[in-house]
Image: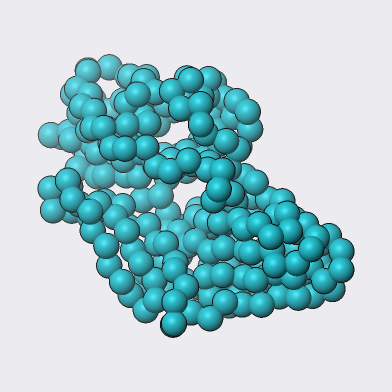
Length: 265
């Protein structure tokens, strides 16, 4: 397995290659000479635009008091940034920062069609990294994370599962980052670990943290893997992996014993 990084117009696409196939086309937007940060100093609540988000960084001065800012609607966000690289299809994602450059707290709130997760209060001088994942043409999940608190992605530790029955992934397999699964004769409804098991496997995870797991369906016939929720875990939509498909699922900690899982691709 090798790492694949591509630079396109001031942004970096970071992914991994397995057997020559790029399996994790997740966009991380970086600000450089091609992207000038957007400045927002509204003396009242601000509604961010897709154009501001597209800059990669929003410098927010709440101008005299704490403010509750609003994300654009999912439809406006998708229409404003969708292109061949990001948010053009379900599972695409875009990442940006909101930096509080003022003296009062800023709270991020939702626009229509947005499901907002994570650490949404930005104290003076702090930053939140927001990741928007398109779930339909009019809906997106946005994860707000404190870059100083959230642990990094766990190292990849590949697991192989060939059992001819539905399986419950262990926390070690799931957090290991890569599962090669052969359903072995029929479609299987596999369970993700419980929230308690994930917590025990990685106590460093805080609300707003997330990690990615790649699941590869290695079936030799048309056998589908369907992920099933376990205690304390909510699946966003139906998550399936078809024969010869490789899917990436992102698991986000939304509470002390609660996680959401969304399919990225």
